[in-house]
Image (cartoon, rainbow, N blue to C red; front, side, top):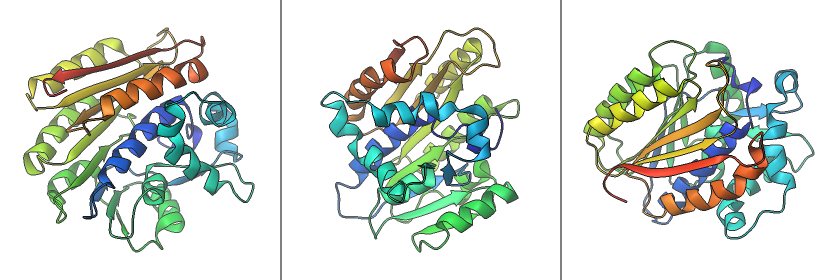
Length: 282
């Protein structure tokens, strides 16, 4: 996968990931006390879908553009409303913008909440600083996201979300995710931990799920959506999330959301949804 997320912004994998992110933030926002979000691989934060990178791949046409144009059934429409309304607000002036995780998190949060966004790539970090750096709630760090899991946990707020969304452009990302999750949970056992992964090499994904299960962490949820049949190991065929300590409503909410989205954003018009517990707790 190309590190520059501008080529992939708003694609089916983004829709699935950000729908879940929005539901987690809605849950955290139910209490008045502040929460903190640590995003280990933040990217540029905001993307122009009319720009050259997005137009080169047109991946958003099969993702967020289809979702925005479709009449969604209830209760999926209500569950997706905060996420989709945030996108529509960005587009109020007519530009086809799409929020990365940082911009979406800020749009869905409250004045008392705080954010740490890690981005090592100098070009991407400069864009992130330009787009959200003026928000006093956010701190942008030129720090390796894997190191941040030890350096910045537990947060002072003692509640919040750790989002791990690496670019998967180097070998060993699955192994780093398992080690990172173990380290992060050890320091912040009460937090919600969300790990995104691409579904391409099925054997690698199966091994990753087994390794996560062997950690023995309670309340570990697997959420996956296939967009197409796997034909080549370098072709994205689906999107997955491992979520530790998910909101108690999230499993049912994601089943509802993905069942409604699958016919819209899968290549064959059907898609395959998998929501299950890797360890007891659901």
